[in-house]
Image (cartoon, rainbow, N blue to C red):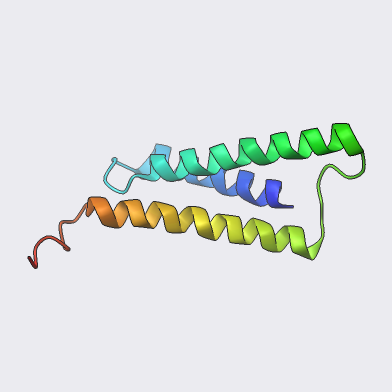
Length: 95
């Protein structure tokens, strides 16, 4: 399930970046983080399926929670980079 969650988030973020973003909010970085995660998860699932068999997509509660946690971590990393770059110059205005 985590492959589906991350891939869906990557596709949505890429569409939003392509249509609306002017580079100010670094949605391209969030897209790259999510697509990189999706590729790594896909490779992990593929290798596990080839070596051990079983299910390719897990639909358990733990797999769903893992997908949500991975998405939250990706968004947190993007927000930290966004805060560091301060696109609206609100953090540097006070100093």
